[in-house]
Image (cartoon, rainbow, N blue to C red; front, side, top):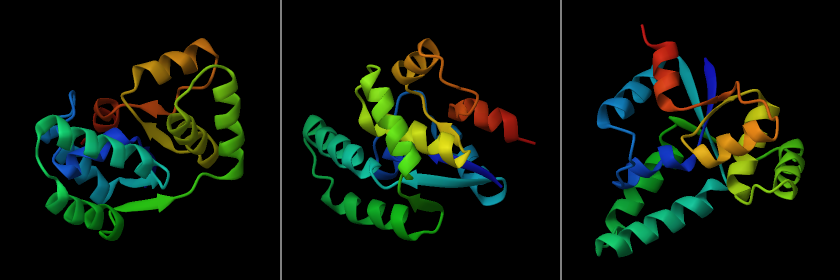
Length: 155
């Protein structure tokens, strides 16, 4: 099984939030891979981003997502489909280094650091992060978007 660490972007559809660039077909393909070829991991600190994004979306759409929150959180935390992990110490040190070098999104830094340390694929569509990594000579061989993952593993 391929170990894949998910950026929070890939968790937002669970809350009914559409993400530009991710179709229902993509989500279904990723789900199928999760039953046979991929183990999905989530970093515990992404809740900081998720809560903020879900709340912001509820204000933007002027709807209450309270009923969705219960089901979505339960699905993400208890379904067994995702394994929740904490960043290891080496990832925290790398995240700090990245912050010192100018990348201000600490959550992304922790995600990237954890993927590197744990030898995982990091699934993200964050072009700002990818540009930062490349311009600062960080390894990006483990940084994929869902299209690359699906293409790589589809039969």
